Length: 431
Image 1 (cartoon, one colour):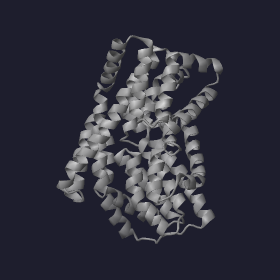
Image 2: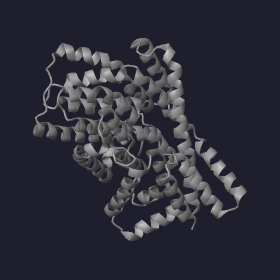
Image 3: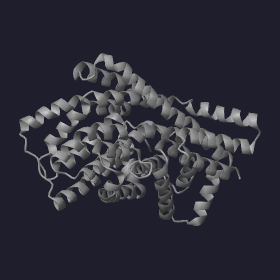
Image 4: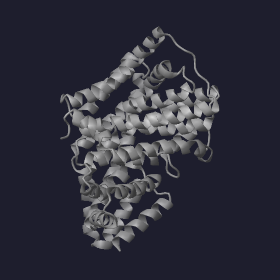
């Protein structure tokens, strides 16, 4: 009965338009009140929320949020777009390739799909519209391409998964995300190439080697952040959390003193927005950790694990079922609570199938990334529609082949462990 109370209250609160963090917290509290007395329930929920935030790893989130904000306003997006345009803009449908590459690079720097959609989309969507690309296609491509930044580090959601999984190395997760993220980007570029051939998308002007070098040099300081953060982690110079502090200092120096596109007077506003974003994320983490404790208290992970393992002894089938459930969850729930709530439920099943926690984490994040582009709660989708001045109804058709590419990448990541584990094993981060 307590689980029925949890599910029904959570669904009702979401239907009433209550913010997700409050819906999770209230439904958790109602479930605890149903199970035990009032005072212990209140105390337990408060303790679990506070305990859920008591993790050194989570300190990296506000740091990477702030560095992403600085990068978003520091002229980084424009330089990355010019760099990508110099490389592939001359190809038929080149602007679509530029969009994918720019979103991937900016996502790798900012760690945020929403930031990538907003920063890159505000430049690329109007430019593609001007050159005759369908605006619905442009918005759909921007939304799906922006999700690559959730896999390619630094990624806040991978940090959240590391906490939810109980100790998977953040450094290993960061390195593991590269190949899946690149695979996803390549899949979207294949779709773009097919669209370019069918709809005769125009090719851009060719640029000389000197121009390519100039654009590369202009973007190099931005791209160096990736090398700085990941190289430092791999080399053992600093931890992932310390890398966040390094990223803030580098982004601050780059945006304010080198590119000079962020005036000092804008810093208080940037700090405030970063604090607001961090507060929202931390509240989601706190309430989700409390809900995860309730689920564990009711033995839900064990029940689900035994049920799935009794349903079939074929790992391919069970992983397919897990992916289907996560796809449905991602369509209705934000990534952060989804990772925190469903990791304790499905991770034991994956481990029982000899799937490493690292491999499962990459699969889960890629799966839930698709939900960001899926109605009715697709956050990235709404941002892309607003930038493209179109509606979700209109961009569903161009989204369909992009979904196929994303599903294909998900299937490969799910059933080919080497895609996720190859690089971490090469660098000695896992056995």
